[in-house]
Image 1 (tube, rainbow, N blue to C red):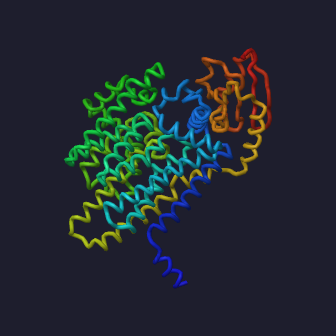
Image 2: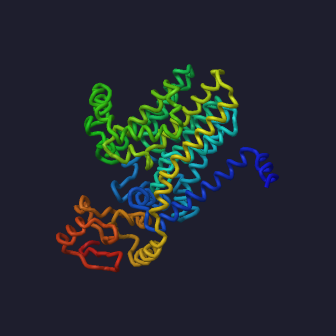
Image 3: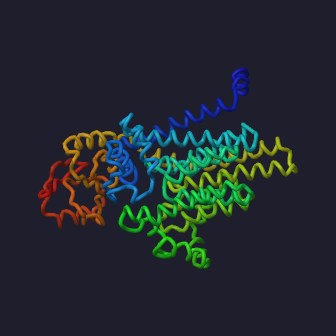
Length: 471
């Protein structure tokens, strides 16, 4: 036993990193796949996102049927959709899409380990920081709330920062540019990072700021409205502050008392605690980066009226998580440079503190909540809905309840069934309802108001209506 311990101690840190990442992939990809095969991937977001990927893979570029005809009118995400579509074309399976997002996080974690080791020169501490990042609320949120293309921003941003620190600006500019094309608001991170770089007397920051703020403004103000033929629905979450992008920003800045009143609620304060607790609140040490880089990203989520956006449990926290952990590295480096502490002892206590915090957080983490909600006995329901799908033509318009939306992403025309969506612009050909979870109200409204329907299939769990009089 003693020899085994000695042998383990002699292993290089990178070996431990590889072992951790393999376990990480098995646990998170395994849970994501198990959720899909037990009817726990829903229309928002897996069904919607996977549908666009599959349509694009079949050369129907960015075609969507859930909210808008062209997905770029919902989110300006050309890069992740195109890359995912190419990969899906080679390996056409839902497992591919669900596993891909875990691999993207792993790619980002490798970059973070290299970044931490570059700045701190301590492989063991860098490993601990990487493990803490891997299990942070923002990372677990994006992995376990179905699928969202924002996951691409995680490796792009981290590797861009790494190459920036290496003064390899050709790659940092390219990666920041790709990150801006992941989602319309990621450019805010890039622009803010550019401001931090300028304040640190690095003129490359001007390029970052131009790329980041430029692409975000172009996408939100012009491209999305032009494609959608309406303002971005994301702005509706900030309607408390105004009705347009410029009005919202000006009211937030020029009416600070209103902004503070909106912010100081238990849920939003808890959100800040969640993001900073796992890093021992150390990023507060680097106030310049904390205020300029992290705080605006935090406010984007905290000022939203959508409660899920400030819960640190879904996909919204990729940029904020990258920011807070980058600032964590800078904070630790700053403490090391003070020379008031024994560096070896300080490293030891930092590692212990991080591990203890992680152990306190993990029992309440999203992973264990999702694990507890995943009922493998629902696999029989998956088999049944698969048989139902074999009876439904692929070229018809499907309206499905939210809970089973992830199972219908291979239909190019897909709609959501609920009471707010019963007045369709184009009526569906079939309506598929999962009885176990459907809200009674829309079902009763549908039954009482839609006369041109007939039961196509029914069991204890599902009912499928065929709408007569549609093509």
